[in-house]
Length: 92
Image (cartoon, rainbow, N blue to C red; front, side):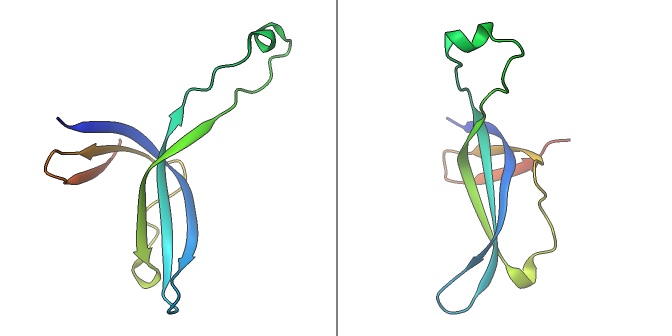
């Protein structure tokens, strides 16, 4: 059984290890549906919908190898195969 999920880049931040190594930490996540309370549905103007993302994959790249491979809100397809292989394909 193959697990597939659409994901977006939701975070890019600096990361460090205790020995002075510098990294770029990229987080991919997918949007979780958040239901609105019924009383809000009748408000005018409607308030913005709350958005929450569940992290699905973290990629950590050494700082000297970072060339801007990922940018915020890029869309990807994450595929996890039965044998443990993981594919991250950029959506066109």
